[in-house]
Each structure stands twice: as structure tokens, then as C-alpha cells.
Amino acid sequence: MSKSKSIVFFDGVCNFCNSTVNWLMARNRRGNLKFSSLQGSSASRLLPQEMVKDLSSIVYYRKGNCYTKSTAILFIIRDMAWYGVLAMPLLLVPRFVRDSIYNWIARNRYRWFGRRESCRIPTPEERSRFLD
Image (cartoon, rainbow, N blue to C red):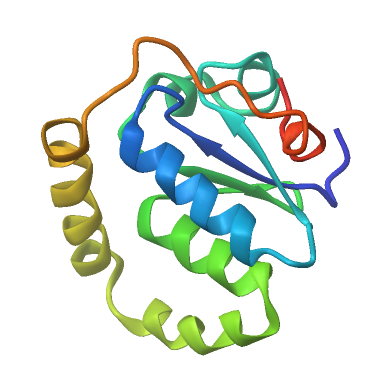
């Protein structure tokens, strides 16, 4: 896989995660973001095993580096549109503060938003944006 790829890895059975992917796809007019579930073979090939097993964190594979939790979210926002650079000052907020908010949402996401029985299957229109 090329280091130039930008891939958002997400929990494929989480309703909140799937809604987030829908939101990102609708706003990523550049089409530079690709998506894959953490349960898929692309995640197994590209990510360290501990990241694949930790379904409580989004993982952003960007330019050969992996970002997790709140840092992943900020870089995804930055890369999806020109105005995303406005989110970068949030990196000045200490990571433990940003990640504690992220962890609180991650711990409660199934209870608040539910979960699917299986991973999302992309529609034919979305297929080019998804990896296995």
C-alpha cells in the first residue's frame, strides 16, 4: 500500500462510527479519504495488531503514519477540505484532555447509538472509496 494513501479505519459494527463515515464521505469533496473497517483485511495488513484489536479507537493511516483517537479525528478533518486547517489549533490542547473526551464517547457509543450484527457493506456508488 502506498504511503500516500489516507485511510480511515473504523469499527464496522458501530452505528456511530458508520454515521461518522457517512458524514465524512458527504463532506470530503476531494475524495482523498478511503475507508476500511478495523475488522477487514486491509486493517490486518497495514496496522499493528494492537490497533486492529482495539475497536474503541478510530485509526487514521496517513502518509505511512498511524494516528488514533482525537489526533486521528483532527488530521482527518484537516485532510478532508481546505477549511480543515482551522481544527489544527486543537492539537495544542493536551492529548490526555482530548483523548479523555474521545474515550468517554467511545465507551458509550454502543449504548447511545447501538451496534450492527455485521460490518457495513458499501453501496455500489461508495465502493470505490472503501477497501476490504
